[in-house]
Length: 348
Ligand code: KG4
Ligand code: ZN
Image 1: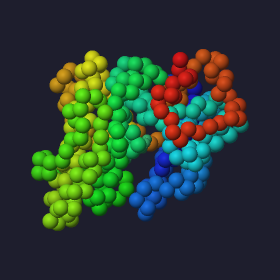
Image 2: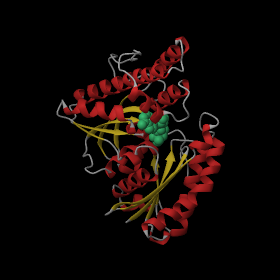
Image 3: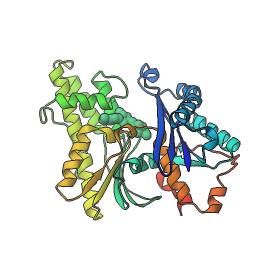
């Protein structure tokens, strides 16, 4: 079975083709980062217009690379939410138009479920049940995943997402949007302990987190610095920030695993590409006889392959009647705000 995956929820147009037996055949991403950088963040209207320009050529590119024609597509998976409404509409409109033309089912996918299930494209892939840490530009959640579509939210950030904190720190350090990878690289050169930053809520009795205070602490450190442009200071501050973030995430997720007696941890979302987080979670899990899984590096940030694998997984769990409902759907929808636990309907 050949699945086309389309992602257009934010500032990346992602398209991929997955064969249900062979795995990922081809994938292509166009990132709008250079366009939005001028404004210091994503401009929704510009994002939608750029998705329109990119999506068809990218689709042609992945078909060509996989040696397939569009007539060979058996199903289409598309990000239905959460995200920017106009941006989502581009992917969803293209998916449904193509679905109607080819007479194939169109499966709406929750963006975070895509991130989570991107791990199924890793070798080896994790097995259910597992604890999941979802860390992206918009989400920071600890979730108990009992099986496909069975997601229990155990804790989340009460304010900023981790990716957002990375991006704001990058901005304060004078680096371009989105600054996650740049802050990580700078931190690599810094000294642990040279700049101590707070670890908000690390000892709170629940599994919730908070990152906005950390951002304020970075701002205060920059404001009070003798020379905020001094390279050693910038490196040490980046190190202090990354150490604080990684400490909080590692502490909370290990606490969740112990409390729920889980042995497998799965990391998902853009920040799962972070080197320091990966290293720390590998060592923390190893010393406790636990295992940790990360998505393949190229599939950590937004992409079409994660949407295709999530759509395929959904399809595999539907009965014939449920699948029929996904053909010739003229009432297609986008869900800019959508909680993952509300996205489980088709699975039950
Ligand atoms: O999942 P994603 O591509 O988009 C959302 O769904 O939000 O995540 C993007 C976020 C950005 O905030 C970016 O700075 C962060 O992931 N990110 C990183 C790294 N790579 C991407 N943060 C820290 N270290 C990285 N290596
Ligand atoms: Zn994402």
